[in-house]
Figure 1 (cartoon, helix red, strand yellow):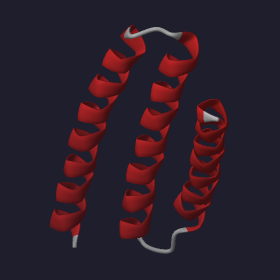
Figure 2: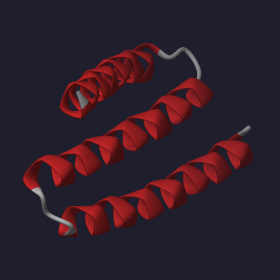
Figure 3: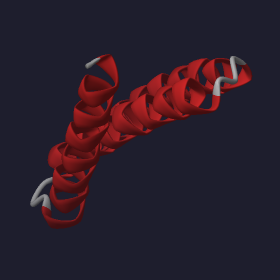
Figure 4: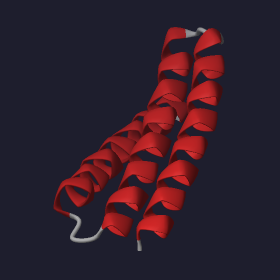
Length: 86
């Protein structure tokens, strides 16, 4: 039963990735694209965590943590750039 829920969660994460990717490509404003980029990175981190679970490798969790920190810093830098530009 737990395995089924994990597969459902992975499928929902994949759907969220596709929806965020569509918003990133279509988004009419820069703010929409920044938020979509942040969602894409969060879903990618979720994918890395799922890969760690499926493969049974703990090192992937370290990769996910580093990617989360870099993603956070990247969004802050983009927000600062957009703020100065406006």
